[in-house]
Structures are given as structure tokens and as C-alpha cells.
Length: 333
Image: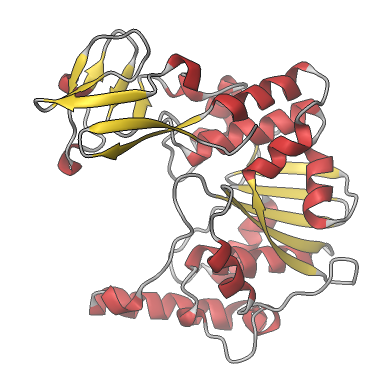
């Protein structure tokens, strides 16, 4: 993968052509339009550097170029079962999630990060990436049960980015990078789409022996919750935690300063219980930069490589007319 030190700080569009972003490369590429997004045409590719450049971000020729470790395990045990994958995109949330959390596992720092998030010391037992264990290649039985309980009738397949099962708490992590939490806008939905959405929401409210009423605030209905992904994660995750006799922590992992309003709005719609009590459940907005701060200075090859990854990761280019400037992904020192 390309680090910020290997990329041009500024690029320009001249006569409809854009510079390759890789430092030292003089190739000029066609500027993508919206209709060309995800195109495989050669005019958007820099053959010398193995990327397709959209103008603001790029896709690697091979997704393995975007992975820090265990690409073979990722291919063999997970990707074939994952609902969707854009691992070759430089701004891929999935690649970021794998690189960071697999690195935390190998560096022995995952448990300390989870303790910082929830305030309770825990011992990790299983880690599921997109519902599959990287170590065993098996699916998450609790998630299968939750899907059967809540989604058998509506065709939905909730797939958390991470499910981390510990001795005391079940963590569900919804990771965001350049995108925000999905926000449903009922006013702009077509009538047929709105009707399907209402039926799905009704199922979430009534299935699982009305578990929805236990974990959401009084007078709140599923259809009124605009953060639809978070709603599903909170509902299914808390049910899984109860079934396994654990506390529950839903973590919305975001960039520095992002989703502050979403945190307040969503917290007003749920019922939380302190995690030190029976059946405790908690919603936490946590920043990627918090992980960096926690591992910076830690000894070991994996921790040091992860720190370097945070410091050198880009999130593409921002443009002012025909001039683009490189963006650093994280606000780290």
C-alpha cells in the first residue's frame, strides 16, 4: 500500500487529465466522472503503479496490496462468506478494520483497548470479522441465532464489522472511516420502498419476544430511528449478549470529531444499563485516534507497524476546482 510519504502532496487536473498521485510518476490519467466510478477501463489506470485512480481515491490492482497481514487467512476463511468486499479500495473501511484489529490481536493490546472503551477488564475469547472467526473459519453461532430471531421474515442480513466475545462482555463494533452512519430519510423514499422499510421495522419491534421494548426508550418505534444500522446492531447485539449471559457494548468507531450529533441522538433512543450491573448494556462512540494513542510507544514489531500505519495512512484527495490536496486519514502526532 502507498503511504503518505510516497504520495504527492498536491495534484492538478489539466485539460481533463489528472496526475497519478504516486510520487515521482509523470503519467496522466483520464479524470473519472460519477458514471465511471468502479470502472475498469485502462484510461483511468496507472499501469506502472498498479492503481486505478478516481481523482479523489484509488483502487489497487490486487486487494492484497491494501492488507498489512494475514491476506491468506482473510482470503481462505472470510472473504468468501462476506456479503460485500471492497478491500482493494484505499479508503476501504473493511481493510482498515482488518489491519487495525488483527494488529491489535497480534500485538497483545486488544484487551487493553477494550478495557479503555468499556471501563472493565476483560479476557478475549473469540473475535469474528464480518461474522466469521479468522482463527477457526467458523461463523458466529450467536449472530445466526439473532438473525433467525429477528430477520427470518424480512430478508435482512445484519453483518457487524466485528463481534468480540469476552468473558464478561460481548462487543459489537460498527466501524466508519470516510463514510458516516447510514441515516434513513423517510421523506425522500419512494412509497413502495417506504412500505417495505416499515414492514422490516415492524418485524424488528415484534420479533424476539418484543425484545425491542426492553432495549429502546419508551414511545420509540423502529421506523422513527434514522440511524438504521446502529438500531439493528443495538437490537441484535443486546439480544446476543443476553442469550450468552454477558453484558453488551456497542461501539461506533469513527474518525476524530465525527458522529457527535449521531451519538447524542441515538443515545436518547435507547435504554442503557451500567456494565457493572447484571445485563448491562452501553453505547460508546470511540475514535480511531484513541487506538493510536493507546498503542503509541508500545514495544513489539506489530505495535510499531500499527503506529506507522496510523501515521502514514491517507484518505485520498480533497479538491478545490482543479487542484487537489492529499488528506491524512487520522489526526495523530
